[in-house]
Image (cartoon, rainbow, N blue to C red; front, side):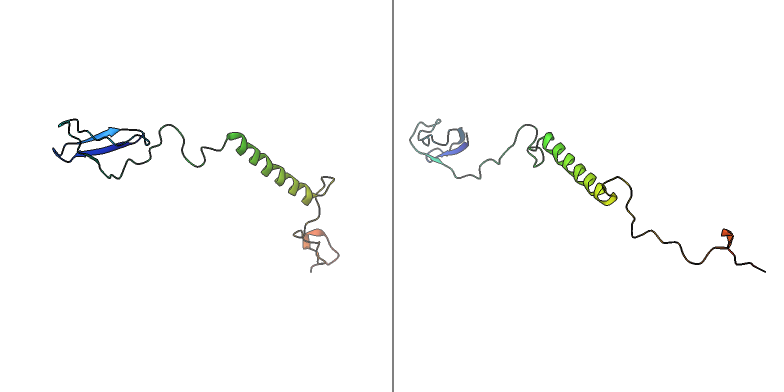
Length: 114
């Protein structure tokens, strides 16, 4: 229920009244008892949230967050499984280098050094 400001046109008494939105405006001044009240235009009160919460992430349940996390893990596991093959053995990757045709001196190749 909003708070309305009123002012008497005769005695200039100003006060606030806590009324329902559908209630008729007051007409009698509580000070001079004359029918000269006018409801003043005011900025009104700001919207006040009381209690915990009222942030965009506070309305989401924890179970939803857990479900999203499980789905991400399942997707990642599926991608890993597809990249390693169906039998679990590692598939050859394109980054491994093939053995070079030249041999290193420590391998005991047939090239003799003098």
